[in-house]
Image 1 (cartoon, one colour):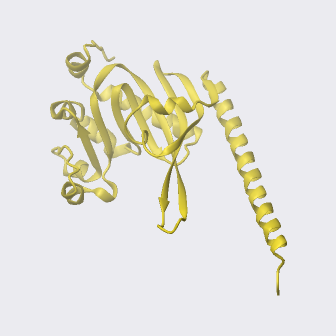
Image 2: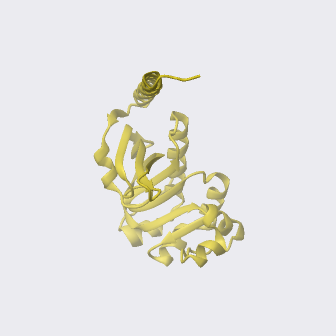
Length: 233
């Protein structure tokens, strides 16, 4: 059966229109959910603030293009200034024959403001670049007394002594129990991220995890590296 090219074009147009409408409706619902979530906790809500993407340097920022920051929540979480948002960027590949493919990478990001600026420290899951593979490729990470922790996480720090001062046995115990996201200390920001869009309950869970990470940093670390005297209850 022969199909008219005009009908094929019309069908493709209708499919594209349907996809656009579905995406629009889903995005609208998501904005409404997060606006209500923000109101519930006394936070501000901004539908989009793409300039936020330039505030941090490490993963998942400063790579690709078309950076977008949406559904931005900001306010206090148990006394800590925080911001949480949907983040995405695009990368492009070519097959060498003029065909270009664009991939959109999406993340849920939460950030807690720290009492003072600390050296760079990043804790992520080993993933596919675990252990010997990572070392062979030159991705050296800090090693700790717990083999279980070393197998599960990669820790990178500009200052090795600082890394070992922060990642104490109690910190390792916490992360092994519920280290579901990667996190990084960058100046006075503690940044947590995970692939895919997060839901309101996940935002709360991740903020709680970051709050626990902050609480596990020994007082002498704040004093020696940030010049801040903290007294934990």
